[in-house]
Image 1 (cartoon, rainbow, N blue to C red):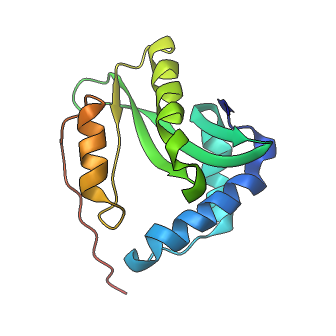
Image 2 (spheres, one colour; image 1 turned 90 degrees about the vertical axis):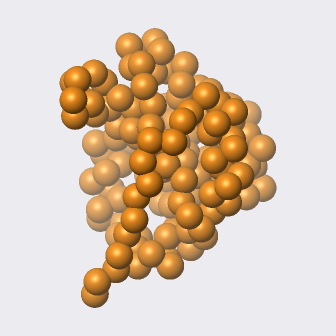
Amino acid sequence: MEIRMVTKDDFEKVVELMSEFAEESLSEYGTKLDIDQLKKTFDSGCDTSFAAIVDDKMVGVLGGRIVNDFCSAEPVYEEIVWFMNKKYRRYGIKLFNFMQQWCVVHGVNRITMCAMENSMRDKLGRLYERLGFQVMETRYIKVIN
């Protein structure tokens, strides 16, 4: 497996993965995959997104952005999506570790990750705890239209 930064040339591959993600996890929350919006997000986030490649196929993506902490202005890596094709989920930790090392090299001292309630939240919670995370916040969503 190869892990590397996402490039502008990867857009179609990212769309394929995000389509899988939307089908698996987002649809029950009223979220529809909008390719134009995904393109805008993708164009602004390539330099902080990472791809897992197996046999020349992108099988996972971990995308995020650097934000300033709202109290201290310290840089924080804020995960937007971490998705692995089901067949390759065993490689997800390697992708995470690559991103974490990238953060260390770039002076980012904190990472925030999210876990969707409909995607093995308990299992992911235990994983995050093993990786050294602590619960900070729970978010809720309400579809009003």
